[in-house]
Amino acid sequence: MKITSYEVEKIKDPTGIIAGDRYEFLLGIEVPEDDELFDEDNSLDLRVILAVVETEERIVQYHFLNRSNGNVLDFALEEEEEAEVLAFCKEHYKEAI
Image (cartoon, rainbow, N blue to C red):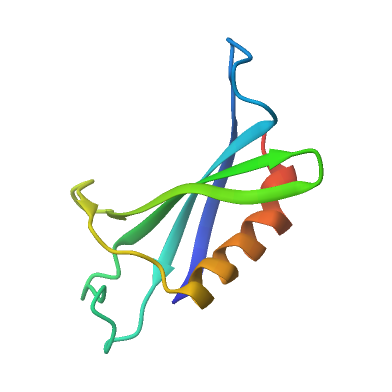
């Protein structure tokens, strides 16, 4: 899996119920042809919600999206892929508006 593009936005919590900050990432991804997620149009996105509480960052939710129709795909990240996505999000969440 290769991250080809991204957008990040800080999610507002007007109620203050959730501790810490939340960031939403929309990652454009490219997967190899032998991967079950492979799509000939390379039109896959990964939506990730990152929680940041003090010095701890963690993924609280993610799902794959078909970019062309918006459908949610029922797949999970492998452990090493999730670690790669978390590292990417940790590196870029401070860019959020």
